[in-house]
Amino acid sequence: MKDEDKSKAQLIEELVELRRRNLALEAANAECRATQAALRESEQRLKLALQGANLGIWDLNVQTNEIIVNRRATETLGYTPDEIGLRLDWWDERTHPDDLARLREAWQAHITGQTSFYECEYRLRNKAGEWKWVLDRGKVIEWDQHGQPLRATGTHLDITERKLIEESLQKLNRELALINNASQAFNSSLELDVVLVSLLEEVRPLLEVIGASVWLIDSETGELVCHQASGAHRANLRGWRLSPGVGIIGWTVQYDQSVIVPDVQADPRHFKAIEAALNLKLQSILTVPLRSKEKIIGVLEVVDTQPHRFTKNEQMLVEALAATATIAIENARLYEQTRRDAETRAVLLQEVNHRTKNNLAAIIGLLHLEQRHNMSEEARTVYQTIMQDLISRIHGLATVHRLLSSADWSPILLSELATKVIHSALQALPLDKNVTVEVSPSPVKIAPKLANTVALIINELTTNTVKYAWPANDLGCISVRIELEQGEVSFEFRDDGPGFPAEVLSLERHSVGWELIQTLVQQGLQGKVSLYNDHGAVTTIRFPQLV
Image (tube, rainbow, N blue to C red):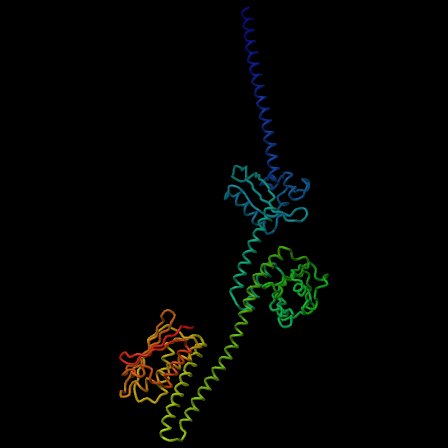
């Protein structure tokens, strides 16, 4: 009985243990089912995330080069899963030749341990023959016992749209840089040909065309003249002239509009004579008017042998360049006209200077001849004095003329004028005295139109001083001081003689020289003259500075 009870008890324990194990198994199964559900949910979320991220997935056997990709990777290239090759060579054949070396270099760097993961941007040719940019990222996930890679996996993302945006931004930056560089190049020179060459050197490489040219309107005939061209036919194209309204260029001027012609051979406006002369068949033309102050001065033309070559964006870019270039072209034209005018003026001025110099020399010669006339001794003395004064004045005018000629008729230093005229007067007079001249340096300048007047005044002052200042002495000194006070020139002329007589200071004595000085100061300089004695005779002339 006891054994039977013992057996029942063991059986119950076994049943309890079995029940416990069943419950544990059921709990484990429930947990497993929950884990599987979670995994399925996670896989679904990952799938949705990958779909949302537009990612393809690849799995590569590194040893055999066999590759498996998901549907999204095949859709990027426009193939069905059945059309995709299962070996890496199939993908290499569709990789852009310029990118293949970079792709292999990035992969080699990863599998040799130089990088922790693999990443590369490159182009793949799709089923339609178009190039698609992709971003590949991956990582070796299995290695053999020798450290060699066995398996790698990664993602495959179509970045074509991003690349197109980047290229557009880069192109825009290049265009902005081009306009900036072109503006600097245009403004770096005032030579018309240099400006035009700079313009064409910027346009032609940018648009990658066979030629470009600048046509300017001849103001006299109204014709359009090819002033500058680039490309293989530039030498034969320069100098061509088109009548108003002829060709697409003439139409551009007539209607003041930019023109894109995708196929010029089908356009009735096309002027084919130039093509025939150059042995060239054009297809596309882009013309842009050159405007200055709302007036058309010419046309910028860009040509190519490929049809449908130009876009609206390229037209806008060329228009921006044309607007910048037009300012430089007008500046160069103005500079060229100014230079021609200056050359003409210089030739005329040189001729006038030469003739004036010869005329003054002839007058001085005639006056010297006049001094030789036979007459009474009394008459000769008076006559010689008059003639000598005239000769001295003409010498003074000749001195002024030389100074102004060397200064290109611009304002000259009054101190230099005074020095030259005083020495000229001293040389023209028959002196039996030694006279020193001291002219203080001064920055005051005199206008060319007043130079002759001032020279005549200084000449008269010098002549009068020589005549009256040192009647008994054989040594004398003339000193000049020039100052500018509140826009008024103060010209002080003094000698170290006995000073002015009382009747001169009181203006009771009259002479031709003194009256000439007063007239020239008052009427020629709009100034005033004063006389006083200070260890010699002092004459001060004040007049407004006119430079």
